[in-house]
Picture (cartoon, rainbow, N blue to C red):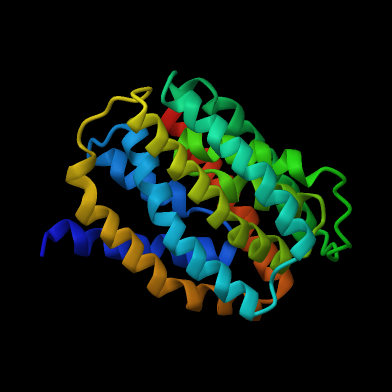
Length: 255
């Protein structure tokens, strides 16, 4: 069996463990590793979204079983995410995605600081009253397709920054991700078949893709349980620190 399979199984396991428990980072971690191997941004995004169809389904089922999902919010986020993901795919296969990255990084850093402030003040979760979760899903899906990861950091951090229950924010975001990933992966396939996107090297990523899928599926049940049992304030601190760290790292890479 190709050594890449075992390497990316470990990457997929670690990325899904973080993503499933904290609501973000599977795409960021997996895409970053692929890019470090010289994979093009479009190929990396297509591969990661194909993997997330399977890992997202396993993660979503786990969160449903642990009752971490708000069903109304799930429907609205998924709808917006699908539209944004398809739009982001078209943009990524047409223009460089780096042009929008500074804005995403700035948004993530701001959301991370807000989450840390809420943890410091010991602010209690409140009934989520976001009036337009569909646009939030649209923005998250767009940035996720552009950067190969970003759905969780944008959506989870925004929900928690607005005061949503951390468990519901994480569980709902992870469950919605399977629909966004499926739509984005399908859009990449359509772009390839219609000639809008011409690429090379996808066939060489099959073992890496298989590893990401297997590792992520194995980690999903454990991650869902971790979200259920971690104390709310500790979960808020961890998510806030992760968002700020990811934003700082992305800013370092950009500038």
